[in-house]
Image (cartoon, one colour):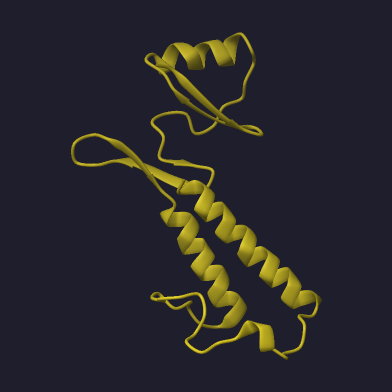
Length: 123
């Protein structure tokens, strides 16, 4: 099988003869390629091969950047172990805390977007 993964202007190919494809893209279609060669990173996801040669993907660098972003926002690393999204006895329906200001909304949206992408990468 030969495969092409396209996301906007990012391409990843899985082909039997990669050099022939690269030559065609560059000479015939005038593509300007960067990062050609065996895949190691694409769209925030690391790629590698395990001990038996099976290709795997893992968003390690992306998650490291998410943790760094969280530390920058809140001054501490996020907890690395939770058993539930809510603390025991927490009742969000009775929450009377103030609504977020514009900066808080932006931070919340940024964190949710990053988490959504991390989940998408792992699907």
